[in-house]
Image (cartoon, rainbow, N blue to C red):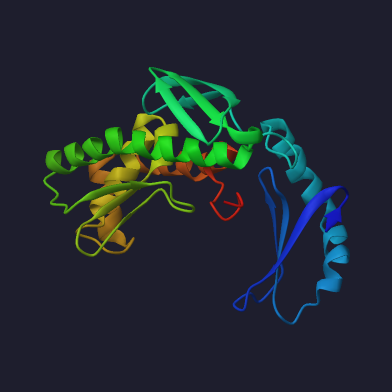
Length: 240
């Protein structure tokens, strides 16, 4: 359905106790309904929250991430590496991405933006494996933390995680962060090897390794919203 020319997707969640509204980058509005709320109520729900929705839409338009705007970038700026990549697009029989130094060439059949976003995510993940894995292992060795393995993925909702067996998982999106912020996140996960919760002992350990932890965590909390839209698209969202 459409609301004020914005695409609207309505879903139901058996665990939802109230209505949730989300303005999805490049896709439109997602309305999550509890089963007790009728879909017929959606238009009135959207009207009641019109001011918030239009404000969110304006923010996305400024970032080039509003519904209908092309999410594919001309430049990928990776602060962790202090490196910018130029991206060029062309027609291809099948989706392909070629890397030549700091130049990316993306070939897409019919200019499919979804396929392009997926290719860029895969490239970002591979780049993360090259740079984030050794970065994490060096920090672990420096601070005497024993870890089992390090994995890099394009995670949907978290910067990193630590398993009960000492395995570290890092989000490829860390490459968009300045190195001090990425370092804080890696140290955060390394502290979880010994401290499985966020209690006082964990916080003390993190502050010992990163004296500016409080400042870094504040900056990290706002960094997610500034990530490019194509990094957040899920395969299911792309129709692939």
